Length: 320
Ligand code: CP
Ligand code: NVA
Image (tube, rainbow, N blue to C red; front, side, top):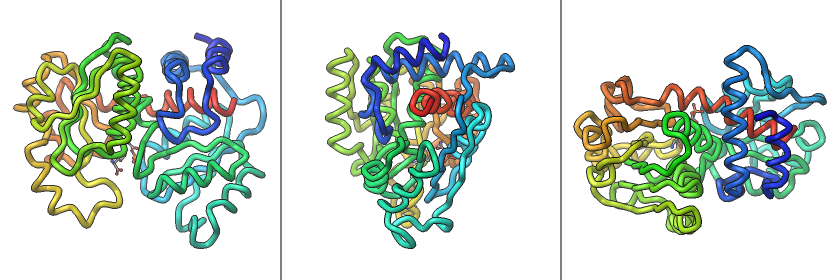
């Protein structure tokens, strides 16, 4: 697929102006980003780029929380496509304290062609989008991590193609779970979610994911027992038990999440060729063991690499 072909498909797909949630994408938009990401990955690995920005392009990268993967893949991806990323931490701009969110949005729109933000509160992203003249992209909030989900589904496609699969989520039903479940359901997969009591995905997210599944022929089910969720699954996904911002809950969470650890014994219940996914960073020995993370079924390093290719595809389509 060439960039021009992807661009034509994207424009016909009712594409979003902002990307704050998987729900901003139509199925056709999501499939177009993924198809372009595969093509861009092949090109980059072959030593050339499928797309470069024709005009000077700068993007603000606002990070209220730490990041390795998201920051590096955005900065490197922009660089590879001839654009520039301006990294701004909370101590630089103090969003909402030194300056109102709406004023930051209005200022940035005069200088840059896009705003990508990692925030504590999803409502801050919504406010940025409301007052921004340029596209706003979610780089993780308390509600979603939609850039991560694109890389997750790309990795599943690389291993299994596009046919529907059964995917188990085991652990915290938080931001990463939300975006993964929404996108997997939109693309026709069955998602089985096992979380401790009190840590299930938000009801409105589940409802939306079930609506996507009804349309795509997939399914979304919540199950108490992680063994039941994993039984014969093609993919097993977990995330940290203590997300950024929840550090004070650490002790209580450790106790409740222990039965949800993805270890060799739990993984043995999945299909023999099942893959293991983790958005990373991982807390080795907590939600996932060394043996699983480093084992033959782990797809996590490909998944991390695919953050680069999926975000490049998204940026080329949204800002190109
Ligand atoms: N998976 C992910 O978003 O990683 P970082 O927090 O390091 O960006
Ligand atoms: N759920 C984790 C994901 C980190 C990429 C967090 O919010 O900290």
